[in-house]
Image (cartoon, rainbow, N blue to C red; front, side):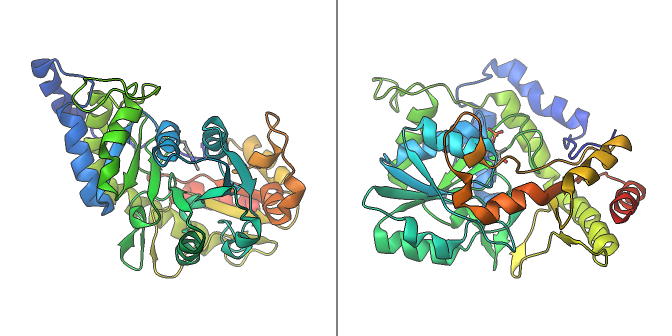
Length: 357
Ligand SMILES: *Cc1c(COP(=O)(O)O)cnc(C)c1O
């Protein structure tokens, strides 16, 4: 069975060496040595002024929304994983869905302004598939209307636009380090941000609202701490991240070489000026995506319909996906092909042959 992704594992000996110290210290959670080491290494790697680790990306996104004390309406995209919309709703905010661009599937910045009301307090765009949003247009709108911008950068780990790390855009960015992502800590995530006055708040929000120093409980918050074992996995994987991304790049290139001339499909394209991480390989079908998906599955290949259904079509909500017709169309016709560092060229060629047929 070929899955859409496969978790990147560091050499086992390396991990064992990394965690051996934890037996000496007996300090295995609550922001220990590995935790602070990983935060520091990620600040360097992501070129981010500050990185705060969390137990997972979803919790990190909720913490980011809460840190800015937002109220009212948040403009966002429905073409994403459920987590983005859930985080907004669970934070007591109202998501207002903006349609997406046909070329790279990110939020269409030209359609945001018409959705802004006196109740709008933030924009939550997603660098979907690692395609980077129109960050300059979004920043201009945020400045004009005094809105916060919190990026869901779960797919954009380590990416750069014109030499600048994605973590530097907006007021904050959330990264996911889930096992299925380009960089993993098994489960985990982080918020990258620049405002140093939020340092205490970030810590408080992941640790039951306990103040810096532990004297007071300042707010009602949950437990979103990353353990030392997870941080250790992150330290190991971070040493190998360049290998992972280079290997992913050659798989993506193989897909591009094989599929460029195939009629009736639109394949993923590099964006100009972007250093990509090759996290996903989406293909848009003119005809029936479902038929291709089933055929691949019969051959033991599990492609995935990311992102279907749209989050404004989820059963748990009562939103109207007719208001985002482009997102609706893309969601009904897109398929993400398997992509991971050691996917063999033979397998890529086989997947491409089936698609061509
Ligand atoms: C994976 C993902 C998340 C959630 O991250 P977890 O670490 O799994 O909690 C949020 N948004 C997007 C777009 C994702 O792909």
